[in-house]
Image (tube, rainbow over all chains, first blue to last red; front, top):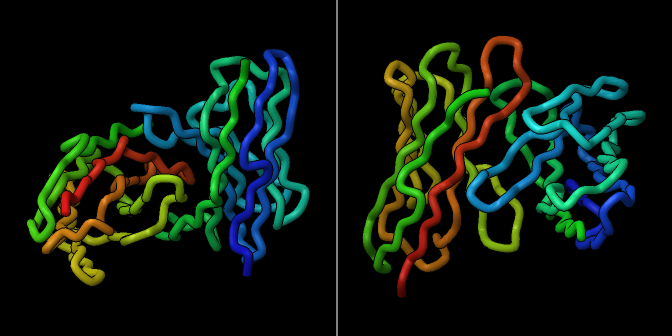
Length: 114
Length: 113
């Protein structure tokens, strides 16, 4: 199993550009989520999905869209990038949405918005 | 959004020393407490998931305890080694019906050879 994969690893955007961060898992996990990690802030939840076709907002959803058309993929879209979205983004998944489930994290995407 | 606090923010210890740090969380509507280990330039990896008051978990030299009534968990590392250097994160859920995992800001441990 490849586990949780994320692409790209690094990206530089100009303000106003759009892009999609890709996340995929091959473990047949129901639950997937996106976090951003900023210095001094810890991991903050952006959006999550408890299964295909179901998404919901986390703590910091503004400026981001998600969709979950398949169990495997959970892309994160930035419609109009802003410098405040400069961050490291982590995708995570777990077998179910159960509160005791271990989260498996991807390697992260480092995004710089100029 | 829950308030999950970790202390200290950072810690330097000598190789061979034992150490511990704290995760504090609201005791009401408690469901589960997670500990993750996060090495620089890697992604967080799960250490423990704890659910019951008085729970103790152990993995090698690392152990954790849980007190749900007072809302805290301790992580202990016995005989710290340089490879234990990492940020240790705790996380818990936002309450009944919530699928949101709220993380603390972490404790950054540096073990000096």
